[in-house]
Length: 298
Image 1 (spheres, one colour):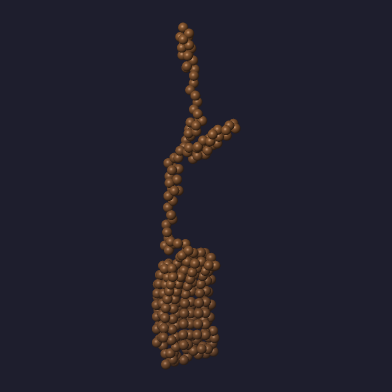
Image 2 (spheres, rainbow, N blue to C red):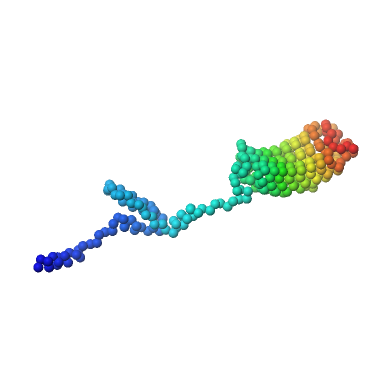
């Protein structure tokens, strides 16, 4: 009889028993992990689990369930493609060349174009390489250049405006290349060297040197010139035109035919040997000079 009563009491109380609430651990994953603040929410919940009400609860490892977006970001970060290599940019210029106090030495390193230069560059020595062309963009952001030396390359073409922004350039050497004509030259040049090229007289504009009032040294020897360039500036001290095809000169080539009192006293040396011209046939062409040109007079 007692056993029957106990069973009836148990049956009466079972419906009143409620299921236990979900544990803290289960509640931590009830977050929309597709939202932007998913990781922040997980971090906040983990913080509360550890320190709420001053209780010491054993540290739990935070489990972050990544969404497709975060997985893609992680993949992108893990496999970040290298930037595409630019031409002649396989190595930084100052590793390929030598950079020292505003000077860049790129001699005999087999480059075929002008390398990117540090903006503070003032002197570039790129002798004995394989450069075939000079362009305006080569020096567009290097305004402080004072000396350029491209001796011993394969330069055939120089783009118009290549030197137009180089207002401080004083020395330019294009010797031992394959040039057929001269580019427009910057106004402050004191030395221009284009010897050992293939330049003909038609490749030099009539006023190419006229406004170069600081030009002191001009080297155009060992080319294919048929005549002395026109309008040579008064500032010249040395003119090398030897071993060309110059066959004649006029009274106005170095002097002024209509002014017998004119003296060109700055010129120290004119070289014309190795040309087919006989200088002795043109005596009035040198009356303004303190020194006779070097060459054949008979």
